[in-house]
Length: 425
Image (tube, rainbow, N blue to C red; front, top):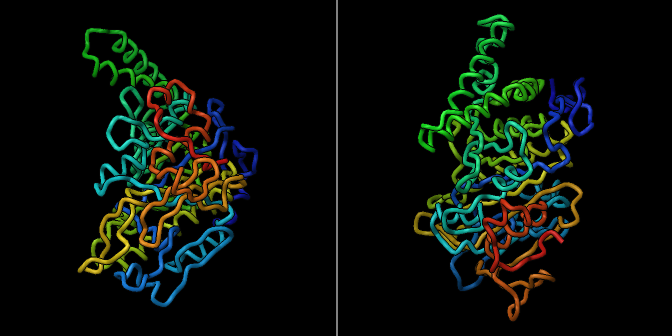
């Protein structure tokens, strides 16, 4: 069956569109689903959304700029590189670009953490972790993690569910079925009895307070997993009319959308992966940058295109916010190996359908990719009274836009000395 015929399936989506999935009555189905895509390794925004031409007397910034110019779609400038032109032609109206975001580091770990949480040091949660903790109470899989996704959590917050294989996860949901799902080890009555006894046993163990705090948390977590087993049938029943990809970015996308549409999941952190090997995409192109970076960027954008196409087919496109970020950016020049090294000033891309803040670029860098100050209110360049953007500004604005700033969970991890920037209006 072709993907475009997916919408013709007979069941009902939780968003009221004919499709594949039944709603979970416990899910906050009116809340937006939030997806953070990590372009691990440090992407080259000068060849994507913060395009740079070469400057007479300076080292070559981009080889493509020797023969090509900067392109524009709507209000967004981008590099004539890879398949950027087709991507922005299709999605510019749904995109906000935030340029000139200074990660203040060349360290992968610190950069990924700063961009993911708004805090360069450890201890702060990602916006996906906060959103799932605040909005996802009572649902079985509020937060998923796959591939190179970076779901940072803070002490006391629940770990995201890490799914490496949809088939194995479904086997865990229906442990009474064999791998093919067409035979049972026990009768339905016997299996229910086994589950009942298991729940009773774990309840007795949980009520015993002679264990260590760590063991108590593990026991309580196991008890919660058993209590949520029935609702996981929503995930088990949610299928596409064609086989899931066996690995890579496409499988992550399909699994995420199944979980979102089943009503069991609110947030996910994923990272682009090579479809053939299952290995992470690595934008850390210290050697042979042009060839390696272009192919990875093409595959990543094709994956994001697939995400929105599939979301449209199953009725999720209007309930989805996608944030794309990386560790940092790459140097505005090549090294001796024709690669590009680490550069702290990078970009975010936020995508949402029918949003008032899209088809827009906020933030700026100069011709050599150094950050420029912008006004927090007008968003225009303001070298006198403006601020240099950091990931903290982006994360603080995302919290506010998602309506979770004043929640107790967020207030434990404040951005009290970080300016408010009106990225989202």
